[in-house]
Image (tube, rainbow, N blue to C red; front, side):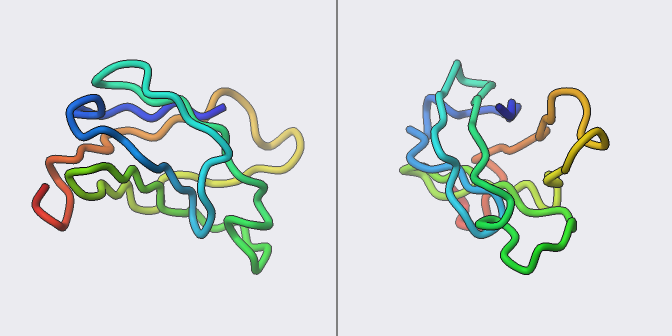
Amino acid sequence: MVTIHGTGFTDSKVLEVSFGRADALRFHVVDDHEIRATTPPANQAVPDGSTSDVNVVVSGLGGAAFATQTFRFGIGPAAQGPPECEDADPEDSPTGA
């Protein structure tokens, strides 16, 4: 489970959350400032098997907000603690939404 912090989540009517090249398995908009999402399997989000950071994209009726290279899939003990993505704000979307 990943927690995404930002603003405008309820106003933009979030339709999709993605990690790298794959959609979240499920997500829940907790409130205007928080989304909780279940990441897809790492091999779907990063098909080449690298451990590079991936983009997190929150898409809604008003456009998409990008948190560039803010999430890294971890394997085993190196991946500790709850992962978080900060500042996914639909107001900062490249579409001007």
